[in-house]
Image (cartoon, rainbow, N blue to C red):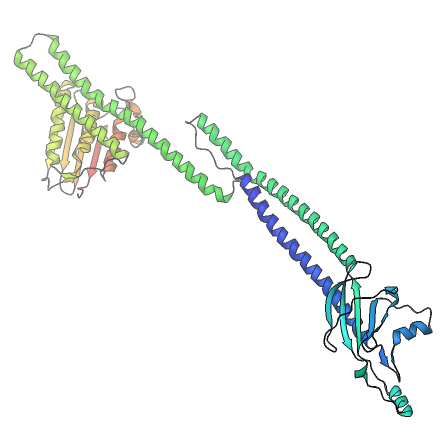
Length: 472
């Protein structure tokens, strides 16, 4: 970016400077040449008035002044020609040399470049004119009876001014403009380099912070430097948001693995307990068949749990959407209770059920709802004191309300909200589980458009699951 800025700005400034220098040079050169032209025309106008017609010839006042006063000085390069006689008279500065003769219509000056007698370039004006006739000369002509007309004595005046000096000045001006432009361009480049280095400093600092963050991806997101250009602040914030989403996705994947282990540990423990009891002593074939059937039932539940967890992962990754279909929540809850009932009996937990209202075509995602119900029942089995009771109440009046209440010891009211966070178990830290079940259940409830809450009153905890009936 810095190289592009330097090269791009340098080229642009170079072109702008070149155009401006050319325009300055052309403007000054045009002004100086115009000044020379004006001076030539002014000189020609003054000198044209010095040609006077006498009684027998044309005389030039500037020449008479030189003849009458040896100290008189007439500057300039000019020459008169008498077109009638072809005689030419030049100024003292010509030193006997002649100028190129050219002219146009009467009293119409023409300006053109010429080459002087010594080879120098010059600019000259050529003017065809008539000598003037004053009143005194007319009186003398009347006395002698001889009248001359100015039209019979046409004159040509060529007035020149060398331009070698001007060309030299313009050449020096070109060099000065080149040096000034080069110095200006160098100054601008150095200024751009300094500004770029100053501007890039917070960017390099941000780069350093990102590199440090890459070495320790568990640290906080890199802070944006206060002096970072405003144009890059939005890009950096967007990058931080993207990085945060990527890390959140990674955390979700890690949590999913923990959730999967958490959800599968319970049925595996159930299968293990069933088979261990079957091997403790000799049992009748019918008893063994029942226990093996229970183990198969738990295995079938494991298969459903795995499918549900995989579905949750796909829903999280937006690979799959929540599948909405009508089903009877009463049947689903009873099925999940029957799966967990042996564990309730093993811990001598009394379980009462209360179901209110018809299903009314309730619609949601049954597979995800199974995970929530299984998690809530598993929490009761693992954390309710042995020999206590638990109540399950299901209302199907407006959506679905599932309440599970059980005795609980050691929990505090301020811990209720934190229990929904991963790895948070409050006063139950010494028991089983990793503290992931409720966080998973709460996330699923949110995916289904519902809410999961927990309340503690009189050493009894109540979990409420509110779910709306979704439309296809």
